[in-house]
Length: 305
Image (cartoon, rainbow, N blue to C red):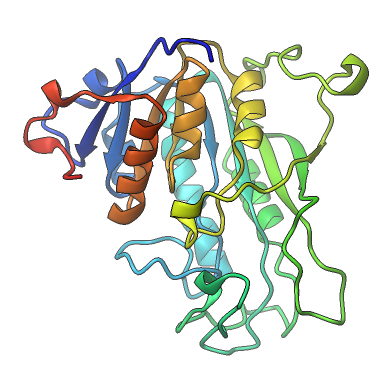
């Protein structure tokens, strides 16, 4: 393994005691609401964003202020689009976003989701109603609704990548094919941006294509966080969208995959997470991988572990 150039990271609760400008000088995990944290961060300090926001109507995380349980998918899309307006401010002019987002079906106006033997986290006691304009059993098209909303806000929608999952979980439905893919949207802030075309090569040295066959990878400590994306997906995004020493942002850090991969690839990382349980999970995951928590500068802003 390549020696870590940035092995230390700070742990903070929003608002921190020191300026976010100081935090951006090295890696940091920040516990707080992503919109509020981003509003406090300095402009044009992030090179690339690799993230997977909470999907709509698929999980109740039980945390106040969570995204994903809005009463309509249109409200959900607007909420995320507003947040990415703030991302645009902190992103460098040549910066990019790699956005993984999954789709869902209408609930049939059921206010709950039955337990799933293969994934107990899918059970929900509350679900939003069928969105206006859609029918029961409709595929909602959440990824493209969000992609077009971001395009309308000024982002350049450069590419849709299909993440094909060879080991996708089977579904119990009998009236349609089993879904085994998700989308990763590649967006840029400006017409010209940093992109390393030679960083990722496929078979026979071909340049990266738009279908990525990547197996899902379980992280047992995150068994309740079924949206975890694999390190191999993050690696591709980090390699093509940044240089060593750049700052990689994940405003929905979850179990910490983006921070772990970015740090291992000698990038700095800024990970934001609202859920204290996942925040502590990400922190412990980094420590287990050989990173060091910088306790010297935590003061009263440190999140307890």
